[in-house]
Figure 1 (tube, rainbow, N blue to C red):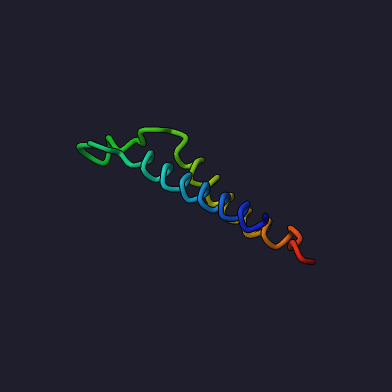
Figure 2: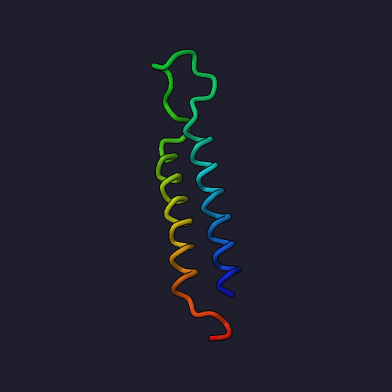
Length: 68
């Protein structure tokens, strides 16, 4: 059970990090001045992804094992 939850949180966290990085990239910008992110909440998505991966490690350690 805890392995399934951990893997799910890690995959969700990695997906949030990838989406955050892709959404923050200034696609088609001609110069650095035009380099605003396409989605202004992209850094928040990236940070939530990091938190999800760290939370998965904490949850894996705190949840009891099936046989204990």
